[in-house]
Figure 1 (cartoon, rainbow, N blue to C red):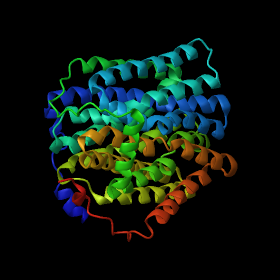
Figure 2 (figure 1 turned 30 degrees about the horizontal axis):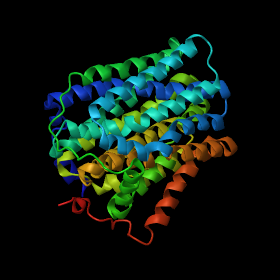
Figure 3 (figure 1 turned 60 degrees about the horizontal axis):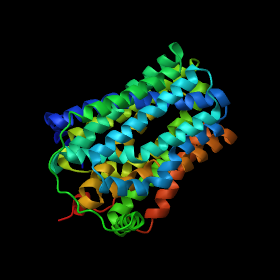
Figure 4 (figure 1 turned 135 degrees about the vertical axis):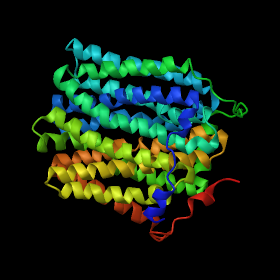
Length: 420
């Protein structure tokens, strides 16, 4: 679709906030997201400052994402079986305890590298349920016709926090100490727990209790996703993107140490560049949500991200790197929000939890492979080759998968996927 027609079809991006229950949820998620992004900056910076090794930094990120790779398929069954509001409250309470533990270890000067690994693994285990449940819970608050806008507004809040959180974390780490970032994140999880007491979920069709074992339900969900060629294609593109295109926590701390004198503030600045792009992308998706998922964002955005990674690896001018990071963030969140919405719209209600768990498995759970890959390349060949290798990998994987199935512009129309 020509860009001028696309912009003519933009609508009010905030119309779902008229729903009072979704509005409370959105505000709580906005606050929580700032805390999450502060910790997302603090953790890799703490690990890198203690080890001075891109490889050991990559191991921390891999350990955090490893539970998503191991347990995501089981999380989907739990989400489909149990009351989502109660499960959410329990999950957020546990999530608050982990960063508070890190704060105590740092405050008492007892922190060791292995502590970071253990807490990272436990936080990753919590996120196995937390990440898909935050999206699935939106279904409990809004109607189907408002779902894409609601998901996009959630992404807007999360990615606005990408701007505020890293920048705030940089100044907090430099002025108050890195432990305060963990303490703030702990407090924001408790705000989510408190907000759930004021939220009333809408009446939705309840799935009948499953009579199968957990393993049987897991297999059933995987088989359904793999047999549906459209969902399978989305999951593949998510896997490529998650593995090679979003290794910010490994590559950006090293890049900041090489191109910026004030390292903590510089790392926060680089993360904020990505955050600006993701905020703009999420806002664009929210404004165009009445028109449904778009192929530009669903299938072609990852290729653009791969090209931008190669550009970053070839750049030696800071302002060009900043621009490329903004664009990378824009296309990443445009892609991930569109993919999440498409999977929810085109999956049966009794499969949504399992399908979204697969979404998180392939987008986030594949990160251990990408983190180790990018960390090892950066460690051996230098940080710029780390970016180039990741960008090339996106193009190679895309080509191998789609070469015999579609021309570049020949993907099936997205709207034709909707179940009748």
